[in-house]
Length: 401
Image (cartoon, rainbow, N blue to C red; front, side, top):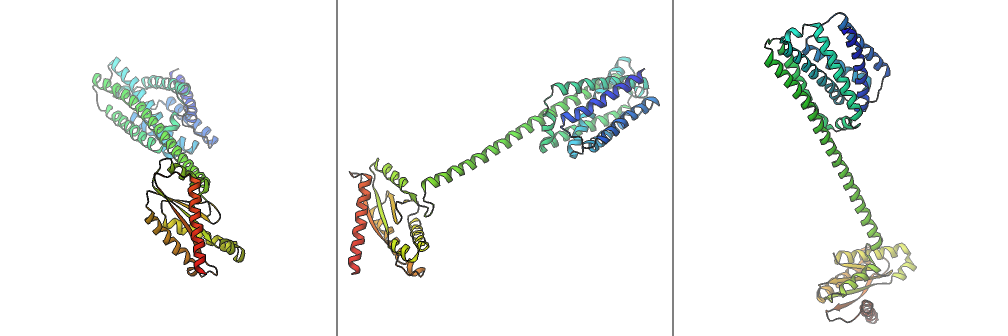
């Protein structure tokens, strides 16, 4: 009857173990034929051991158990090696730690040395039945109450699974070594108390390792999520900057748009500071477009804007018309401003020679110095700078005559 009971519990244990593997580790069965084969193989092995009363030393059983379970997981699920080793250790530690507790308790109660118990087929069968029953209940409880992604989260994170394998592997090796030495020690009470303590500590260490690994994996998941959020925020910032650039800057010259440069002037005027406004007008752009084409006109505009941006680095430069630019220089005196303007004037005059163009390139400019006691509005200041520019243009034309 004991053999039949043990055989039936073995079938139930094997079934729940396969069910738990598929659910807890999120394994996907790759070969149903392998599942059937190993299910029948396990039952056959149990039947042979029970029928022929085969007694295998525990430390050998632990090695064989580990090898068999790993091979089964590998062939049935064909998943990653570390994940398969992890799953194998989970089953092996729980099974043999619980079995060690039952055998040690029996040895302690009946004052029988461990080595003699391991040679008693009846006692081993009872201990195995209790172990199988405990394992079935434990697996069933885990299936019902354990989070579905608990094990999968551990095995998905490479750092977590390596940490778990280090601890679980050490626990299992220690259990194997401990089991080996039990065969050569005859002391009963102290050894069995020690065995119970070792088995309980192994189970506590097992669950502690899983819990820590789970929390670590969850933390890593949050880190990845935070990194993804940061990347999304960076992408959003880049997108916002691009939108701001489109809204604020002239795409062709990279100068500020008219409304933006006007807003800058309004903002500065509210504090009544000392600053300068430079009005730049390109000479002969319309003739260049009409005679030589808009490609040449575009070259002319682009070349002038590049000169202005290079000379007035960090200053507010706005394109307020097709051939008109407005530059705002705060905290700059009129003499420094005029030096920059004259350098721009000379560079633009040399463009036609430098690039061998058939048309003349030049600019006219007007500079207005704004002091703290200024009473003019933004439009009046721009109009005044425009007037200075026009006077400069008119004077130059007279000089050419």
